[in-house]
Image 1 (tube, rainbow, N blue to C red):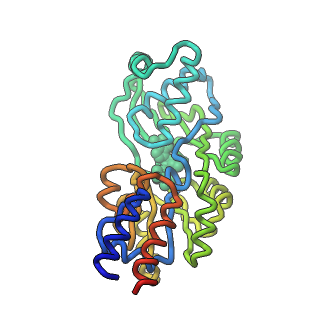
Image 2 (image 1 turned 135 degrees about the vertical axis):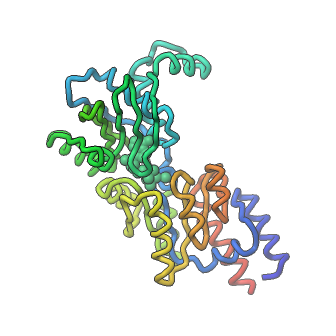
Amino acid sequence: ATPTAVMVATGVGASHGVLVKGGDALERAESVDHVIFDKTGTLTQGRAVVTVAKVFSGIDLGDFLTIVASAEASSEHPLAKAIVEYAFHYHFNGKLESTKQRKEEIMAEWLLEAADFSAVPGRGVRCSVNDKIVLVGNRSLLSENRVTFPQEAERFLVNLEESAKTGILVAYDGVFVGLLGITDPLKREAAVVVEGLKKMGIKPVMLTGDNWRTARAVAKEVGVEDVRAEVMPAGKADVVRSLQSGGSKVAMVGDGINDSPALAAADVGMAIGAGTDIAVEAADYVLVRSNLEDVITAIDLSRKTFNRIR
Ligand code: ADP
Ligand code: MG
């Protein structure tokens, strides 16, 4: 391709909100044969919604939700936002006309102080509330802290996961107290894009830190056969590299929450949305509209520029 062709393609991309960082990146997209999608916030809307909250000890549901929201208020994770939102509505629905300012004030008064907050990557969050340790996250988070939960809770959890929901477990002062079920709907275009990639001879892969059962249920809905689940944030780049070492040319599509190293490791990193600053930095492409169809637009553009016009 001539420099002019590259310039034209870059401009065409930009007019669709497909921002590419230079001719090399544009060229590499041509030979991509695998596209790895992060699940949360990439294939899914990242607008998670709590569908159920259930307490398993003597704790009051309202108190349970206040503690959980207080722990999650410092987290940037889409799951955390959903939990805080749900707890807020449980407590204040109908009790305010929710202008933004007032909501923030109410939140500040309502939430308890969460001391020593830490995000545990791929696991959840940990902090202390009322001088008691609070854990909010997945099975691994609880088991690593030697918190057990009853069979009844396990059955409830499995049911959630088999219906493509993520179950979040909560421990307070070393004791399992309850769980939440969260659904994060697929983006409307997700299945069509997956199908489109297959027609282009490209293999779609779904990569997630979420548990296997939920991951399989989501993958089935969207039409992806190759699933990699329960992958720690640090392991996401290893999945990219292992495909590459088999000779594949890999595009990674992610929102940058936990997947920036994978975006950087891929032959072509595509950050969706405004993303996080670190994602934008790690990626070769920024898909400004957050629409997965732009993954196809980007690869098409590269193919047209470097294949046909060669
Ligand atoms: P994904 O790869 O789907 O983006 P993450 O690696 O961000 O997932 O998270 C993996 C899992 O860790 C989540 O499915 C959830 O069980 C747990 N987790 C992560 N962050 C949080 C949080 N803030 N609150 C509760 N659970 C969390
Ligand atoms: Mg993610």
